[in-house]
Image 1 (cartoon, rainbow, N blue to C red):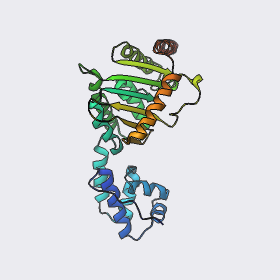
Image 2: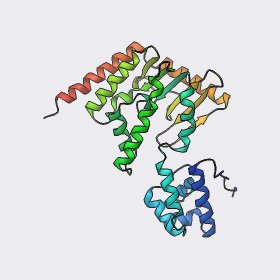
Image 3: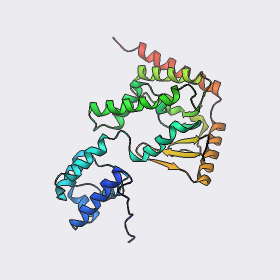
Image 4: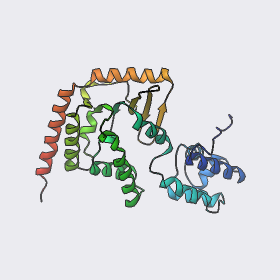
Length: 282
């Protein structure tokens, strides 16, 4: 059996938590499977906690603290983790985002965070974080809106975004919220620093079907890529891999509708949502 991956506990709060959990489990003489059985959860989840890839839910963390005799240490550490608006895997990317002079994005499931309306962001976060309190959700909404200063500054980066047609068709928050959100996309697409394309369902398979993709370029320094799914992300800096993602993005641009056609499609979907609003009884 390979030796467990060593974590640097100073690298992040999640790494500190994972290191602490592994140490406590070792002192208790339990395997990951045995600990998982006692909670009870799958032992693979224990492995993800110890690797710093996942933060346990509050009730699971409480059970871990009790079983391992942590005397509240895991509870305290979990509290610090939950107070951090963004997970560790997103923070490195967000530190680079304000420095970019060009952003290329493909969004598979949702409107980019930099373009979200407050109502859309709130609906999205409530669904993706059902265990969070209203106060925690509002904190996350505020953090997301604060990031939008990047797109609002005097000299914003060039922002080229391809959204999958699913982003337009999935009614996050209901018809009114979606209509307002898509109206914002239309307004942004009329500004000189934004290009919007829609990848229609009819385009079929494409090279970025596993999730969303962002490519950042800077005045100085090499380009980076960032891939993201619903609960994980990876910053890619190896230039050979970044070049492969850039080629994938070129292929997406070729499959997507032209900007004018894309705007026409967005407008037609807005009309559909507005029609839904008018049929709702008062």
